[in-house]
Amino acid sequence: MAKDKNERLDNEREHGRKISENAEEIWGWASPAGQERARRRANYFIDLGGFGPGDKVLEIGCGTGFFTERVWLATRADIVATDLSEDLLNVARSRLPKLRFQVEDAMALSFEAESFDAVYGSSVLHHLDMLVALQQIHRVLKPGGRMVFAEPNMANPQILVQKNVPIVKRWMGDSPDETAVVRWKMLNMLRRVGFEQAEVFPYDFLHPSVPKPLIGAVKRLGRLLEKTPLLKEIAGSVIITAKK
Image (tube, helix red, strand yellow):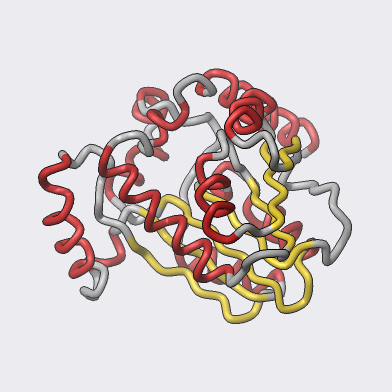
């Protein structure tokens, strides 16, 4: 088990090193549609996390600080932003030199129990042993604290192929160990760990490659699909939220 974990950590560090110079392009946030998706995702973190000025907030998997910046500017919360990759953190530090960034293994957080009012992260749990990471998140949250994460949805056809066909996985630039979230499995894990008010819902039909003139139309169609039974299940992402 230890060998498997160490190998996973090494893989993720190497992945961070490889993508550090153009991570946001690889992740799809740099395009006009990607920017629109990012605004919506950041709003989910802020609204469902329920935190504001003075609240102690932990970000897991902050990467280049892309969402750290958006969340901090909107909330002025006391954010501790963490990632396993020193290379990605160096980019984040140059972007937001006044904020606190530090290397952390999300499956073995160094923080004391009940240290944070909220925990959030974008596209990070699917790189981890999700059950172990959720146990750590639960441990560091204060009673009544909330967690909010956005993750790729395994029921989405593109994600299903990308995460399970090795040649496609490599071509798309994924790390060797990453997967995606199966909604009902995640809900069961949240309850098993001890979270309350757990909810996992699919959202987002706006692909990063959608041309700028079509973004408005695709957004309107996507909001309709998100309300349509069965079809909503194949959205590109899921939002995961729960309370300790």
